[in-house]
Length: 140
Image (cartoon, rainbow, N blue to C red; front, top):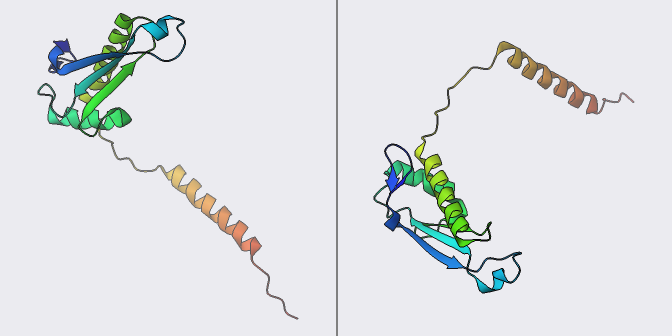
């Protein structure tokens, strides 16, 4: 079990991993070994996540989410498979943890008197500039 917070834990069997060759520098290693990790997690089909967390996770995932609702995280920052695996897992945990914290509702506030006065002064100034642009009526 991978613990996310006090009420959410993801079973390791829900996470799929596949290893592919990494791009970028690495010498001969990059051509011979599959060190990059593609971690797959079925967000929509997960029994571990509540519905509100699933919805926020899908929004946070963005382009990393497939049409079927599978989150794909590719890790290839490190030269070893083990470190890339841990990196991908850490990124998944961080993403789910961010989705698990509900957004803080906005507290509505009133604009201050000074800000209202500044707004009106700005409008008057702008109107004055536009008034100067008008063509003067000619009395010829």
